[in-house]
Every structure is written in C-alpha cells, then in structure tokens.
Length: 320
Ligand SMILES: Nc1ncnc2c1ncn2[C@@H]1O[C@H](COP(=O)(O)O)[C@@H](OP(=O)(O)O)[C@H]1O
Ligand SMILES: [Mg+2]
Ligand SMILES: [Mg+2]
Ligand SMILES: [Mg+2]
Image 1: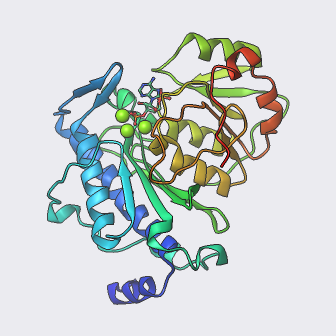
Image 2: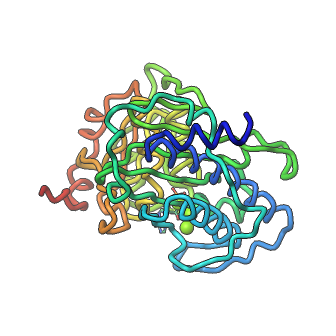
C-alpha cells in the first residue's frame, strides 16, 4: 500500500487501534533485532536476580519498542520489564507505519472515546530469556499488552523463531488480538476432548507447582519457557490450560497474553478466579498466581480442583 494512503488511514483511526497497529510493527522489528543478536553471538548476559537473566537482546528489543511507541504516542504510559533508561534509537530500528490489516478493521465502539490517560502499555521485550540463552529459541516471544482503564484488552505476541529450521532461516510470526475486534496472525483452535494437557514453567519450578499439578491429575504436562509461549499453546489447542501457582510472573508477562486469549474466547485469571488489574500504579508481580484456559475449557471447574492448601497461600484481590 502506498505510504501516503497508509498515513491517511491511520490518522482517522481511534487511539487503541493505532496503538495496536504500531505495536504490531514494533514487535516484529524487535524480533528481527533478537535474531540478529543471536546470530552475532554476543549475548551480553547480566544477572538481574536469582534465576533471572537479561541479555543485549532484551535491552535492544525494549529500546526499539518503547522508543518507537513513545515517538508516536508521547502521552501514553508505557511500562517495560527492563526499566526506564533512555536509549538512542538507531535509524534502521525506526518503524514509521502501523500494520495495514489492523488499521483496515472496523474499531469496536467501546474504544472510540478511550483517551491517552486511560491506557497503559505493558512491554516484555523478550519473554523466555532463560530459554533464549539455552538455544530453545521457539520458546521466545515479544509481548506488547494494551490495557484500558485497568483491564487487559489486547496486544501483540510476536514469535521471532516460529517453525525455525536454523537461526538464519526464519521470519517469525506476529499475532494480535483485541477484545471485540478479534484476533489475527494465527487460528485459535479447540483443545482435544476427553483429555487434560497442562503447560507450566520449565525454568522456575517449585514444590507448590508440583503439588498443584499432582492434584489436577493431567494426562500430560508440557514444560516450556515463557508466559507468551505457554499462552500460545493454549490459544492453538496444544494445551487446555497454563497453570502457574507462583508470584514470579509480572504484569508485562500476562497483559498481552491475557488480552489476546480473551479476544479469542479464553480466560486468564488468578487462582481465585479474579482478573488482574493493569493500571499504572499496580504492583508488578502477579502475586495471586495464574490459570489461563482455552476457549473450550471450563475455567471455574479447573479452579475448583486446586487444593485449598494452595489457594490459601495467595492473597485475594482487594475489591474497591
Ligand atoms: N520465580 C521467578 N523469578 C523471576 N522471574 C520469573 C519467575 N517465575 C516466572 N518468571 C518470569 O515469568 C516469565 C515466564 O516464566 P517461565 O518461563 O518460568 O514460565 C519469564 O519472563 P522473562 O523471560 O521475560 O523474564 C520469567 O522470568
Ligand atoms: Mg526477564
Ligand atoms: Mg517475561
Ligand atoms: Mg522478558
């Protein structure tokens, strides 16, 4: 599409739709940066805490995403996993346009009057860092979540190494969703009937995770890296549920996955069945655990199977 046409199309669109379209192209560019750093082989690993790494790919991908979005949406609050530090955006990391397919959609009415101050964007520039450093590259995703008035309503999951044959032979894929508008970049699939497949952490296991899995008696447990990757398995019916009874995941891990999953008819809640809040003052850790389910799964029925001795370890959402 000619650039001028795309520019004019974007001008007339509601803020939420423009943000989603620009997040699509920023996440896709971040995925290219992540691949380039792996190919160059200098990962620049820093230990942020126990079992918590950061690489040059996490830093550069965040620089690309936050600088591009801030340039276009200076009044929107954007919170990234790797902190607030300023960075110089190289000219070849600039993404001038949003995704044309998203800009071409009809925006649902509920977003027409959303203002800059209603929105918080949660950025996980590289989810699955531990797996990235170990060469489990298809576990890696780039997550940009959009929240409106505290609710996760949509976002982008970009998978830089989708179906990769070699580090140099892939383009990745970019998936989007917005509650009320739908999803794109993938096909939501049902989970198999008469079976229970649960995905959970690979690199942050704990006795509580093991105890909870035993109580749910799944037919299969799939241990993979990344919150984004696990929700992808749920979205595409390769797992019925993503269960993580732990406070280790943060708001940037779940905002985009929750928004896209809910746009596809699934659900992501805490171990009590409540949604997380995503407004800008909220604490970052998801202190109440996670249960995400495929659209065919009865989320409440699964929650009931989590032992009370586990549920009682997690605080209940404060009602306002
Ligand atoms: N106990 C813990 N300590 C630190 N980070 C944790 C954690 N448990 C989960 N996470 C974070 O949540 C995401 C998913 O974790 P997991 O792969 O174990 O399911 C990862 O995001 P990042 O890779 O973006 O840091 C990981 O770091
Ligand atoms: Mg991290
Ligand atoms: Mg993460
Ligand atoms: Mg991360």
